[in-house]
Figure (cartoon, rainbow, N blue to C red):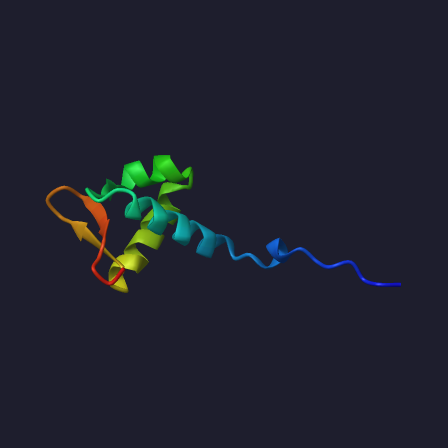
Length: 77
């Protein structure tokens, strides 16, 4: 009896999905977005968005404009 193929979705990493969603959202918003805006657009808890955005900032993939409090993609992207 042949085994049925397992769907790849079972190997998804939820936090990676959320991170990629955040990056794609920022890519569509050249003026950047605030933490609240990101949270509302993604439908993810604010703490999660903050931690992802902070990690991306620390790794150089995003920057945070201190004057406007907006996150933007960095030139690294």
